Amino acid sequence: MKKFTQHLSIGAYHTNQYTQVSVSSLFNFMIEAAWLHAQVMEWGYEDLKTNNMFWVLSRVYIEFENYPKWQDEIELETWSAGTDGMYAYREFILKDQAGEVILRANTAWLILDVESKRIFRLRELKDTFPRLEGVQVCRQPKRIKPEGRAEELFFQPVRFSELDINRHFNSVKYIERVLDHFGIDYLNEHELESLEVNYLKEGLAGDCLAVNTKLLNEQAFLSTIVRESDDVDLCCVKTKWRARKR
Image (tube, rainbow, N blue to C red; front, side, top):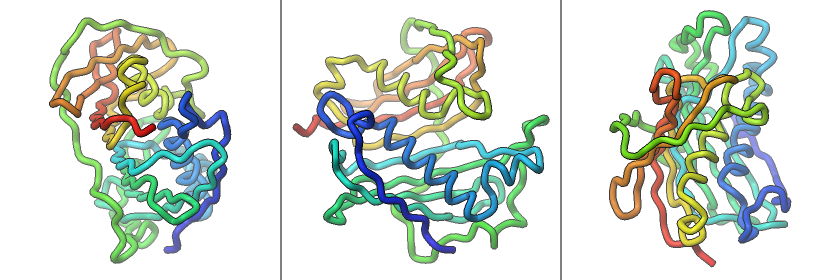
């Protein structure tokens, strides 16, 4: 199994007020590369659709070394990292023009049946999604356990612009809501060092969602996305922060 490589340019619409690429843009780069590589492997969106199935991003772990800036040229590599019977793992590495690592990531994906939402077991597909021997850029994402409510919740509806092609609350929009919850003052002084995500339930049009955040230590927080109608956690996000590099 070969790696899939993309060469990308950072546009102004990919950046924040400091001309650094935004976390949501980096997420989108990775997800698009995963879709394209799956298509090359003949396990893409249209391939699964013919069998009434679809891919779901379930877990993510990312380490941020640096943040490229507007007009930078970057190289994104991704590859299949094996299966454990249920999850198909996929790794990513992002480098700048000098070949320095910007980002390392490991992700876990599920294949679900469109109607029943049952998980398609991958035990018989180990040869289809092999692990590249001797290559692991960072650890696999782990299960995150929610730890209850830490604050009063402010619920907001799922908007049309937040829905993906499966008509679910977009996986990147969870991240945007969590990061925005920290507020402008905090985000002006801090940037992400690492991010870990567990997607637990699907959010849909008509849902009202809130962010609940709990301090773990001086640099780390645990956030959950909560649905108002049934008080269920849809997503858990662990963030670790460092002082923003100017």
